[in-house]
Every structure is written in structure tokens, then in C-alpha cells.
Image (tube, rainbow, N blue to C red; front, side):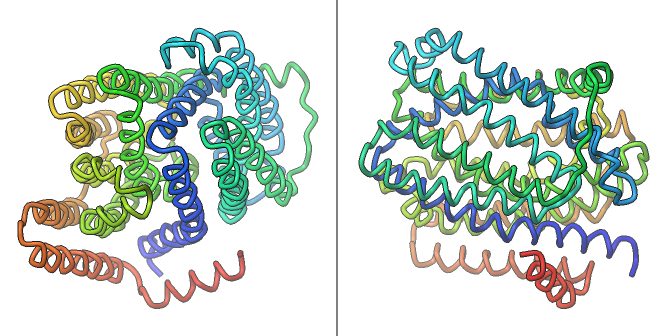
Length: 497
């Protein structure tokens, strides 16, 4: 078997292992979102979105970026499948992340009143934020276990931890929202984060990682490099959350809380459902890339393969979403959320550009090139925020979808320039041809929305959906023996599940 064929099979295998379990996670999320939309409406979803944005923003500041750098450190230190080779760095990571969790909780408690006033215009969520501060400790403790699993590429344990955490979160949240409506928001956030904590510890314990006693001096020496790189990367994470948070603030002031809920619902479709494919693939892609980050030739090959597969996978998903978006909105939310359809349709085209740029973006992180990563993060997030403001000002919710599309295009070409200049990375002809064909499928599907005759529109979009899926299968089969690969993947999943 050629190296390329083996690599493609590995990418598809890891995607199938984590993706198959993530499918159930999505299903739980869909059910939970549906009940939330019915029981507490767009206003309640707006409050949830604001509270989660606040907690994520604080965590991105106090987390010091350790979650990202920890995966890199574990991947680099994992030698010859010897689990003992990472016991020292794993112990250091656990201690650092516990400290950052406590720091996040303290910061939340101290500034909760001012945060509530700034975010909601009053101190109505002051008490809620104090109570929710404990979730920051839960989150960091959870992450300290999950990053070890990801760094060691134990995808089956990682996937199961996420799956069961979401399942229990669903089982707790539905009755609480039914009986207590908006008052159930805080308890469900806490219970969900606690469930994630329990399952992360349970599955991390299955790795049997030897415990390593770490002296204070070792903690300071080893932890210094992790935190130093993490702090630089924190700027990027902080700006991303800050951009989303300020966008919500602007929408809330220019419109109302219900508009924030609609905006949140629309981008949940894009980032949590469509964009989930990037999360699935990066779970294995990032530690694999980090392990070879010193060899530019190997890095280029890995990024080309990942970009090619990402573009192929995302194309039929985009076409299907464009075809069935009215039905998807009704199933996931309610008919009151139909207003977000134009925003989602424009935004989802941007996901094709993101499929290519996301693969390039990980080069900077895998190499630990924190300075350039921070500089680009400042520019990109500032651009994203300004485009969102302009888009909403001129075209409302639809303008937010247009701004996301423009941002994705700019980000794609900017990353091409940066990675070419610094690492001599460039796409080959195969990726360009695949991207062009995929772009044609997406644009044709998008254009079909303007066909007035509903029967004709449905027929044409249905044909495009079938053709895009056939194209995906054809291209994958060109690289590997699809039949043998599917049989092998099924057998492996059956063993691991």
C-alpha cells in the first residue's frame, strides 16, 4: 500500500471513529436545542448564548491557552507508543489546568456584577454568574483529561467521553426546562459541565497513565514553556470569543435579545452542525501534525491530504443543507426561526473556504509559531467584528451571513499568502481542481433558491445533492479502495465500541 493511500485511509478511519459517535452527540444536541426553543423561545436562547459567551470569554483569558499547547506537548513527547513517555508532562498539565480553573472562577466572582451590567444592561444575572463560576473549574479539569486522550490519539475514549456527557446533559435538561423554563438555564449549565467532568475522568483512567510526582522546580521549569506559548495563543482565543461577544452586544442594542437568539441559532447551525466536521477531523489532525512539525515536507503532505478530504466531505453537506434548510430549521427549532434562513444560506458557502483554510491554520499552531498566529488573530478577529457590524447595520440578520462569507474568503487567501511565505506551503493541482468543482456545486445549489417554481427548484436541488454525493464517493474511491476501507472501518469501530 502506498504512503498516500495509507494516509488517506488513516484520515477517513479517524474521522469515522470520532464522527460516528459524534453523530449521536449531534442528535442529542438537536433534541436539546429543539426543546429549549419550544420551552423558553428565542429570548431564552439569547440569555443562554450570552451566559455561555461570558463564561467562554473568561475561560479563554484565564485558561492561558494551555489546552492547545498541552496537546502539542503530549504529541511531541509521545515516543514509540510508550505511554510512560508522557507521564511527566501529563502531570504538569493537570496541575496547571487546575490552577487556571480556580483562577477563572475567582475572576468571575469578583467581576460578576460589572459583567452583568455591561452584558445585559443591569445586574439581573449577577447571582447567576457567581453560581456558574464553578463551571470554569469543571471545564479545566475536564479539559486536562481530554487533552491527554487527544494528544495520545485515543479517539474512541475521547469520543465516548463527549457522547455520554452530552447524553446525560440532555436527560437532565429536558425536564428542568419543561418545569422551570428560563429559571432552569443556570442549573442545566452546571449539570452539563459536571457530567462532562465525570466522564472525562472515567475514560482518561482507562489509559492507565502512570502517575509522576513533580517537584515545584520541575513544575516551574516545564510549565513555563507551556504557559508561555499558551499565553500567546490565548490572544487568538480571547479575540474570537470577544468578537462574538461584542457582536451579540451590538445586536442586542441595535435590535433586541430575540435577535441575539436568532443570530445564535443561525451560527449554531453553521459552527456546531456543519462546522462539526472540522472539529471531528482536527481531533486527530492536530496531534498528528504537531508530531511532525519540524519537517516542512511532511507537514505539506499532511496538510494537502487533510485539505483534500475536508473539501470533499464538506461539499455534499453544504448542498444538502441548502436543499433542506427550511425543513432543518423546523426540525431543530420552530417556525419562528425561519428568519435565519438567508443568513445561513450565505454563511454556509463560507464553510467551503473554511474547509481549506482550517487545514492551513493548524500549521502555525503545530509549529508553535505563536507570534505570527497572534498577529493574524488580531487582524482576522477585528475584521470579522467590523464585517459583522456592517453586515447587520445594512442588511440585518442576512447581512451577518454575507459578512461571514466575505470573512471566510479573505481568511482563505490570507492564509495562503502567510503559509507560502513562512513555510513554503502551497496547494497542488488536485486540491485546486477539487475545490473548483465543489465551489461550482455549492454556487449552483445556492442559486436554485431563486427559482420561483417550487417543484422545479426541488427537483434541481435534489439532483445536485445526489451528484455532489456521487462526486464525493468517486473522488474517495480514486484514492483508496472504498469498499475495503469501509469494511475495515466498520470492523475497527465494532471492536472499539
